[in-house]
Image: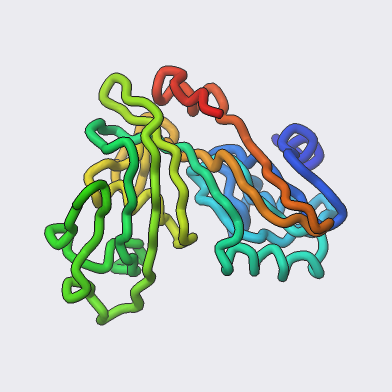
Length: 239
């Protein structure tokens, strides 16, 4: 059984009096689950209180920022709300054929069973010069609609798969996963779109730049592990 002390020692990427950045293992939740793979709960059970400044999905590995003091939490979360935090992900799709660069501007909504989806019919999606969007009159406004933008750069294609560097300009739940799937390029091993995945999900939070409580701009990087690299036969060696 993994202890908080062991995980913290092995996975800490940055720490100061107000903030803690961890390299979250795949299969662990940031918070909200009542079992031993919940990071906030595991820390609390060991006597350390943490406040997440943001979340990444359980199936996603990589950089996660926590406040160590309640006083620091408000400023850190406001940075995400103001979009002054720079986020870089690595993504492996189960496809090829993407352009060298792309911009996905597809609004999101929440459908049945709390599933995140594009707030428009799939056939309404238009792609032009590497930009995916939908006409305004195609958007379903009967539910709350969340404008969402994801940009990407292609790093490599190999054996029917593609490695991308991805930048979510907005921070919606499941944004990268849904955006890529709805343009026809779902992630490898994504349980949202693959019933019985045989690999881990091809999404890794690679880099985060934020203003730390000490006032300095910090850039923290979590290199992908061998399990992630194996999704594209080691091609995830990016800098």
